[in-house]
Amino acid sequence: MIDFYKERPKNSHKGDFGRLAVLAYEYTGAPALVAMAALRSGTDLVEIIAPKEKADIIASFSPNLIVRPTNFSLSAIKKEIEKADAFCIGSGLGKNRKVLGIVKKFLLETKKPGVVDADALMVVNKNLNGKSFVLTPHRKEFELFDKLSKSIEKNKKIVTKVAKRLGLVILLKGPIDIISDGKNVELNKTGNPYMTKGGTGDVLTGIVGSLLAQGLNPFRAACLGAYISGLAGDRVAKEKGPGLLATDIIEKIPEII
Image 1 (cartoon, helix red, strand yellow):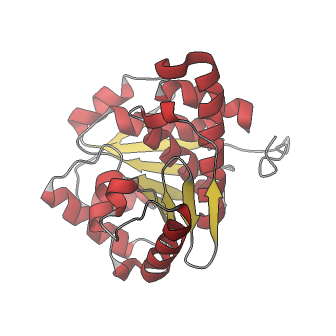
Image 2 (image 1 turned 180 degrees about the horizontal axis):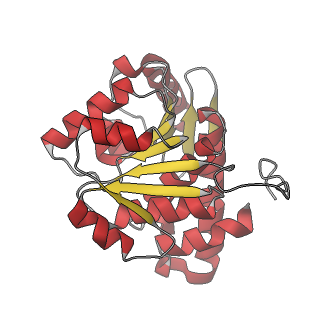
């Protein structure tokens, strides 16, 4: 068992081990993957916040999912996420300008820790300095902030520089993940080429979000989340090779933790 995961007290109650909010808008599969990965990573309660027409679809995927239909306004989002210990935003969000504007305002105003991924990365800027956020870009998404090299050593410096400039933790996804909080930098070497499959990034987002909801600081949550995701993917790859699916990785998480 990974050191973070201790045996739980017998008098534990629902919610003692984290409440996570997952914000969705345009797509349905991605937020469901985030939520299921978070549940498998130990979070007690995960609530998906989505527009009514999407919420019904997401809820149909699994009875384990709690889905909260809401009108997509800043006040409604803040009200729902205020109940959580942490949030995940970006997976399944889409590029609707009005929605991205709401997300930008939310990120500026919230004091909650969270994972910012995918389309939500487009509204990240230096005004978020000091927030307890983990950004999880892949190489292309990282170009929103800076250009990367082909050298791991050079990229370590680039990621550290950007993390310092933004005042946030960055988990750059790749064959070797690079994680930095602007001062410290770590590499994660778990994972494999079969994890290029769609949805694997959403699984990582859910794992990191789960760790934040359970009280880990953003840098450690990013490092441990990358390790768990990659190792679970490695075990699936041994069994299924190119047939690996994001849902397979989710089901391997309990073996790792």
